[in-house]
Amino acid sequence: MDHIRAYWAKTRSFLARHKAVRIALIAVLVLAALLLVLRPYGTKTFLILGMDNYGSLDEVGRSDVTMLVQIDFTRAKISAVTFARDMFIENENGRLTKINTVVRNKDEDTLCRMIEQNFGVKIDGWFRVNFTSVIYLVDAIGGAEVELTQAEVKYLTRMGYNVYPENPLAEGKCRLNGAQALTYARCRKLDDDLGRGERQGKLISGMVRQTRRMTAANVISVFRSLNGLWRSSCSAGEQAKLVFQALWLRGAKVVNIGMPFSGEWRYGNANSVSGILADLPANKLLLLEALGLPAPETAPAP
Image 1 (cartoon, helix red, strand yellow):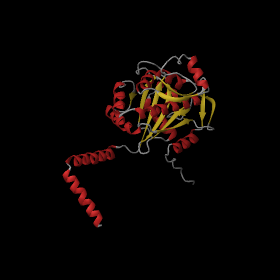
Image 2: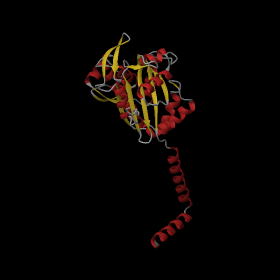
Image 3: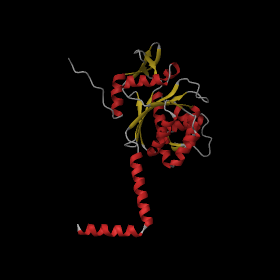
């Protein structure tokens, strides 16, 4: 104990003689305390809707992209659940309806309630963007790096998007600009809706990785410059808070989940409309497991 007392006495004497060191030490302690207090914890879940139109967000059509995003602030992890656009889910009356028509026929809040009803996931809010929003967002953050297959390169080239000198396309890792990213995410001619969902997940992963290059000032600047390119159920104050919380998620781990799960769906018809018929109870259990959420309690057998 004597050597500890002696060391502490020397430290106090040193601090007493050096005012600048005392001030720096206090500043470091205060900053550390603020970081501990302000750092977000827990999870939030949002529904991201990409509408199939350019220009004004006042025009509402089909949801070309329906993505459930669970943000785990504690583990710096993002789970992106992409729903196939032709997937049927049950509406409030138990009638099967295509997931991409709900917003057009009803509204975003109705779709949130239907997803909660079908899959047991609580949704904290929704964001709606369109094609124009995606182009501006990807360009604003400096592009998104994804790994392209030879078939994807050929498709983008055929569509006229291999003409940007700063964003050349070749098999392997490529940095896509906004226009390229939108076309890449929308492509389903190479396979099907599920393949397109995988591409959308890869694009989200690339965009999150891109945030590693961004400073806090960059993130805030992008948010301000793009304000108005989306609609949301969240208030302006809630969105500003989310921007601050997003600073902790730069370069977070992204887990991509495709809905419906493999082996738990088939092509078929419902109400004279063709689409993806999923085993909804089975997909619900698999989704809850993938998101680390508890399975619903089952009633005891009589």
